[in-house]
Length: 170
Image 1 (cartoon, rainbow, N blue to C red):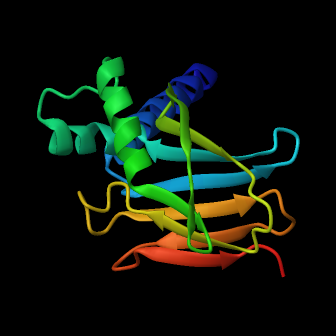
Image 2: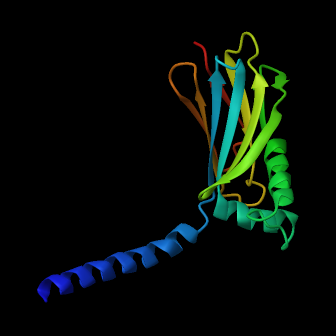
Image 3: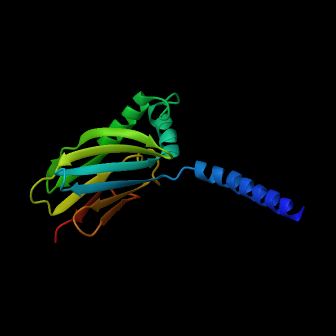
C-alpha cells in the first residue's frame, strides 16, 4: 500500500506542477530574438526572427484587428511576416541591404520569420534597426545576434533605442 500511495502522490505532484506552469507560459514575454547569420556556404546573410507565439497572437489582434488569427490563418501569418520585415533593416554604412522574404512558420511556441540578402563586400560595420512589436509595446525587447564571422556580437533594442551599429570586422 505505501508504494501505491507514493506513486499516486508523485503523479499528483507532477499534475499540479504542470497545471501551475501552464499559466506562466501563457503570459506575454514581450521579447524576441533574431539571428543574423553570415553564411559562407550560401553567400547570404540569413535573418531568422523568433517571436513567442503568444506575443504574436496578442500583437496581431492589436495591430490588424480582433479577428486576426496567427495560428490558423496563413493570411494573418503572411501579414505579420511583412510587418516584421518593414520594421527590421540592415545597413552597411549608408547603404541599406535589401532583405528578401524567405518565409515564416510556427514551430511549437514560436513564430519564425525568415529573410536573406547576399553578403556585400567590405562589411565592417552593420547598422541594425529592429522595431517589430515595439510600436505595440514600449517595453518590448528585441535582441539581435550576429553570427558566422567569429565571435557572436549582440545588439539589444529596448527603451528609446532605434538603431545600433555593430563592428563585425576589426
